[in-house]
Length: 129
Image 1 (cartoon, helix red, strand yellow):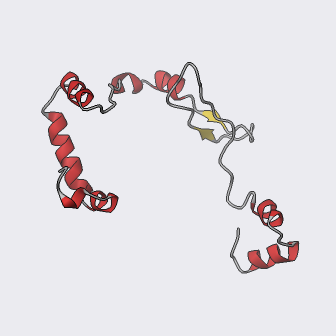
Image 2 (cartoon, rainbow, N blue to C red):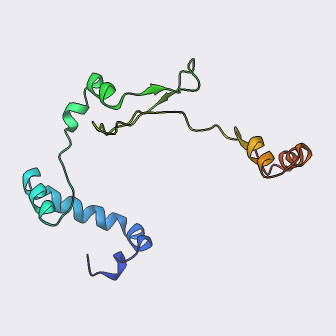
């Protein structure tokens, strides 16, 4: 596959994704995890085992991925997936939820010089939410 022109670009790889998945699946099914790790490591490809069976247990999955409530909406029932990879030196955390559609529109439009009349017209014309 490495020299096949069909896979030379992202677009080509996307167009032939089924073939790539089949080839990778075929290759990985013929080897043990240890063989794959050794093979990939020899080619400087970072790889590691995922303990999927353990993560199927709901309590462990909840502890590991720690879904948290939307920080800026404490009474909300919305849950945001926590940080999956836990690092000791630089631990990640959910600081805020993603903005809702149109939540910051007025603030942004005013910051670039739009008047309230301009914003009302943009809304009436369904250009902004």
